[in-house]
Amino acid sequence: MRSLRSLPRLLPAVAAALLVGGIVASAGGATGRQMATYAEILSLIETRHVPEADPKKVIYASIHGMLNTLDPHSNFLDDEAYREMREEQRGSFFGLGIVISKRGRYQPLRVISPIANTPAARLGVRAGDVITHIRDERAGVDVDTLGLTVQEAVKYLRGPRGTDVTITVDRPGIDEPLRFTITRDAVRTPAVNQAFMIRPGVAYVHIANFTETTSSELDRALARLRDEGATRLVLDLSNNPGGLLEQAVGTASRFLEPDELVVYTEGRLPGSRQDYLAMRDVPRVDWPMVVVVDAGSASASEIVAGALQDHDRAILVGQRTFGKGLVQSVYPLSEGTALALTTQKYYSPLGRTIQRPYASEEEYFFEPRRADREQRPEPGAPEFRTPTGRVIYGGGGILPDIVTEPPSEPEAVLKLMRLSAFSRFVNPLPDDTREAYAADPDRLLTDFRDFVAAEYPDIAQDELEAHRDELLLQLRAELTLVSSGIEARDRVLLQHNPVIQRAIAALDQAEQLLAARRRAREQRRAAVDGQDNSR
Image (cartoon, rainbow, N blue to C red):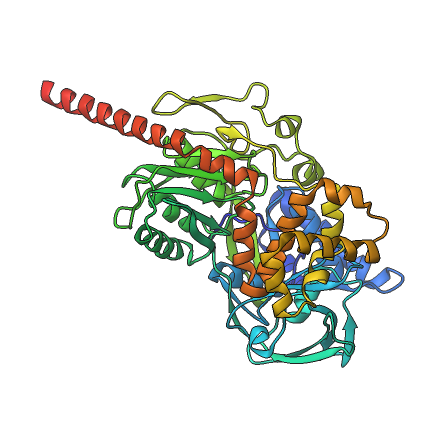
């Protein structure tokens, strides 16, 4: 199994006694002596340490430390983490079917939206509900969600198919808490989570990740958009953390010619290079296209973006991508666990290495390089020329052709978002009031400002007036969320996203690039034909 996702190094090992014994038995020379020392230390800890140590906990920590010396993405997956990874790659899991959010550990756990046709939606869980408690059936207690992270809450909410979970909900406008006992079922998580006409003739498609169904979902979306009149495409890979290598190749194949190089990988052994070519028998579109990327675009999404940029197939807009060019091979182990071990690096068709330096894990994950902050090539970064003569750069991550600032909100609006003020205002409203507000934005804004003055008196009214348009956008989005769901809300926000608007504006440039690419290919074919005729 080839996974290009940036695997978090959270949980180390399991079945450690078998692991250590096997290594000691098979290792020879210096490694064998070092492993013998390791086994002696484990034995002393187990027999002498005060207080008594949990052997599994000690060995888990040691394996975590061992992998931590290698690279940021090699990772041991315990049975739970490995199961979750496989569920994510299949594009489904067993749960309730809700999108949840927490602004911080000690902030409310809010339902952003129930997913259509899932257990939670069928039982009446609504956007804006606050989940105050989750029943821990094994312990027989209700767990207060204040103090939980989102990840910890998800562990309580997910579970085996057909089992029940009970949640306690506070709903705006209702005094008494609501309790829902919900039977877990399969929840589909689409890889292509947005696909619609954003302008006449212009399709917008967002790929959230690369799971087993990404290519087939993309085919269906593009076919529908073609029927709706699409002749141009904005392909959004922002905040796409990656996924399966074969799906990245499949996605790129929809836009490249058959047998064009998409990516190649190389490992330690001589002759280990493996080329991945664009597939032949897949649906294709030849529309001018712009690809949107940002710092959250990693791994498989960088393969797609890098291939389309190298081949002059698309204009890239946004911010430099994350820079993960390491390939993990996943080795299943005993007791349902697995090792995700970095075994290769991948390179773009022109030979650019996408992996950025990772000497410091803190800097790698949290501290962008100066070149990343300034969105420019790293000093001394190698230059590459595309078939049409454009200069692009290596050195880590994919630098877009058109660099934009990431979307940002005014501080007053961000504060109201952190306080969930928009959902707290909109969710208790009756349907007729929401409809009236949708038709009368001035009244909507006036009433919201009165609500903010009463609930959040520390937020100055003049700040709200200064950011009237931004407030109205968030309020319209929240009204749309309640009436039509999360996808419709995102459409409202995307229509005003400055990066997406810049991408749409770049489609003329993409059309010119596509024409230049075709001319360059014709010239190369003519040159090859001329050589053949002269022989």
